[in-house]
Image (cartoon, rainbow, N blue to C red; front, side, top):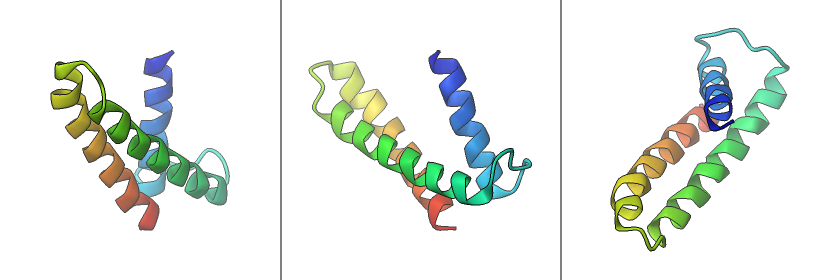
Length: 76
């Protein structure tokens, strides 16, 4: 299920950047981009407070990069 969700997230990012056709309306895609930006921003905080050392040191930067990239796409 996670693979399908991340494929959807990736396709949405590509659609927002204009690299693939938008399958739904552009306003929906723009709103969904902001939802994903918030999702990855929350992910930064959740990974940062994790008890798992590996999760804090590996997944926190990954979530931060994803949050920043989705923010840039949402703004553009």
